[in-house]
Each structure stands twice: as structure tokens, then as C-alpha cells.
Length: 485
Image 1: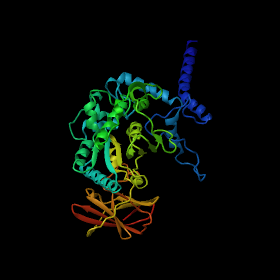
Image 2: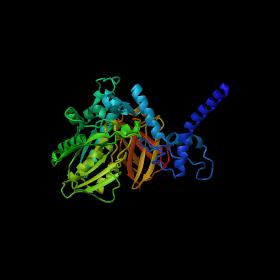
Image 3: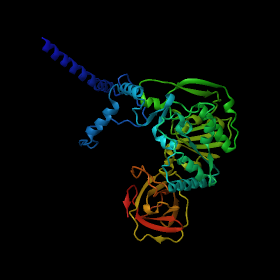
Image 4: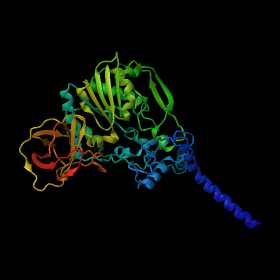
């Protein structure tokens, strides 16, 4: 009898374990039977800073079997199993409470309830990840943008939004030691100081006020209402414009901000963060339909504003939109990696603000602004006797033929690169189109330019200028295809 009881207990124990393991799959099946709504009570709401794997199809469009179905299904199930947010939250709380470490590789649990974004650590500890050559290329690219803006009657302003860890490093865990070295933004500010480019130094302004008031969310990567207001004031000071006294309006404190870092750790549990809200007038109007403040393109007009603004922004610029839209008579806010600078030809503006968060400064090297490539007159060049493989790609993009690729890495410290086709030469950005070239990381020997789509040729001449010398390559050109010489 005693042995029977032990066997029965083993069976019940095994059944309980199997039942627990089956719950996520069962919950997923319930959700799929309801139409796959990831926001229902059995599903998982995506709060992660990435795109979750899509549900795979067993067959491809041509009817053939999808050979990648099993790994794709595994990725989809891992991202979509039922009760995922609840289980992720429970595991995160348990690990964080007992060991004080994060279960999410991109989130750092700091002191006093502070959370940090892992990719910002090198900037906070003083580690350079961009070389001097890459800094020179950024300056070169920014000068090209500045020349284009000035030719269209606009003033270009570059503004790097500081990482939270760069303003409040004291709440990082003690294991992240300050090296005292120069980081990417230090080097870029130093390099841009030698040019005539206008730079809005948000980092210095925020650091000066960081002890007086909290300027960033403790559980989010972004600045709060106070930080955004100071950012707006500093931008207006940089432009030499009246800030309309928005900071003097009534200020209230709320506790309703959902931190993006908190949501990555504990998606099933809310932990509202404090925020500051200013009673800034909202008399501006949007032009056309606006679904949310995160739209890729937003246009506004305001009868009480003056001047016009074209702003290229990322998520940090989100909190500035209501302020700038009320300050300027007309605004155009553009979000995305690509920078369509040629909007100036259709939408003239007095000011062009290029805002980019500190941790993404490398995007100045991986996405060439969309604008007509400046015409160039080439000096005599020495043809390369034994050039390394030249990667050249092109793609028709509206009114442009986008030509980009890689030249010999031995000349990565190039001073300039020119593209010639049909006897016409153009100045190219020193930019590696990493995504278009399907590279794991950007390289310093990239070039990119937009030439008139009407120009076609069988071959393209690439001229690399370095240390006063010129080296030429000639490569075949086939639109939308990658070729090499």
C-alpha cells in the first residue's frame, strides 16, 4: 500500500509538472483561436525595444515547403508563448531581488531604483568606439549638409541628446568604473569646434542643472519634462531666439510615466515614474492626419509662432515637439534613420535641427542624408595599379540614383570621394551604407551619394582623395545589383 501511494505521488507530481509546462502553449493556442490578439489576457504585449519574430508560414508564396519553418517557428514561439509577460516579469523580479542583476541584457539595474540602457556604458565610462578617421568623416559629412542648407537659406544646428548615464553616472553599479578618457561625444564636440557648424551643447547644460532637479526618468532612457524644457531653452539660446517664456508657465508633477526600461524588465507590472508637465499653450495645429506623436512625419502650423523649422529627430525629440510646434509658425518633424534633407527644396525653412541621441552617433556614418550630390571638378588622378575589390551598388530612389559601396580599405582615411558617370562628377558622403550592404558593422571605407536618376552608365569611376593624392577605380554599374571589380 505504501509503494502504491509513492507511485501515485510520482504520477501526480509528473502530471503537475507537465501541466505547468503546457500552460504557455495552451494559452498561446487560446489566443490564436481568438485571432492572434497579442494584447489579450492570455497573450504577450510587446514592450521590448525590438521587433518580435513573426508567425512563420509552412509554405512559401510559390507553394514550396518553407525549409526554415522549424527555426522560424522556434523564434516565434519564444517571443509569443502564452503568459510570456507574466513569466518574464516574475523571473525578472526574483533575479533582481535575490541577486541584484538584470535578466535583460540591455538593461542595467543601478542604485536607488535607477535603470540604465546597457549600450550607453562606453559613453558613460569614457570609452571611444569611433576612431579619429571616423570623426573626420562625420565632420566632412556635416559640412556637406551645412553647405546644402546654407545654399537653401537655412541654418543647420546639430544637437546630440545625452544618454542618461552621461548625466547621472553616479547611480550606475560600482563595477562600471570611470576611465577619465574621452568618449565619442567629447571627440565629436572637439572636432566640430574647429568648423563653423552650430552645435547645441545639451550635455553641458543638463550637467550644470542635474543637481538642482531630476532631468531624466529613473526607469526610462529619456529625459523627463524638466529635462526636455531645459533642452528646449538651450536650443533657443543656441539659435539666439526668444524662448517665449514656456519654462515660466505653471508646472505640475504627475506619476504616470511608463518607463521603457522598466517595461523591458517587468512587462506585466506597472511602475509609474514621476514626470513634470508645463502648462505651455497648445494653439498649434497639425497639417494633415496625425495618428500619434511618434509618426514618422509631422507638420504643424501656429499663428502665435514665428519662423520655420525642419527637424530630424529620434525618440528624444518626441518631448520637444509640443514646445517647438508652439514656438515656430511652421514646423516639419521627421523621424527615421534616413535624413531627407532635400525636403528643403519643397519646404523651405529658416532652421534645420539634426537631433541624435549620444549612443547613436555612429548613424552619422551609416546613413547618408538624402540630398542631390554636389557637382565636383576633379583634378588629375593616378589610376590604382592593383586596387583591392571595389564593392559598388546602386538603386533607383525616386528622382535619384543612389550609388554606394566600399573602396580599398587601405585608403580608409580618405579626405574625399567622388563619383563620376557619363562625364559628370559628384561629391559623395564618406558614409558606409551598412544596412543596404548587409554588413555586420560599419566600415570606414564607405561612400554614398544621390545623383540624378536620368544619369545612366555601364561603368562608374570612383576617385578617392587622400593626403593630396588621388586614386581612381572603375567599376561596372548595374542598377539594384552588387558588382565588384
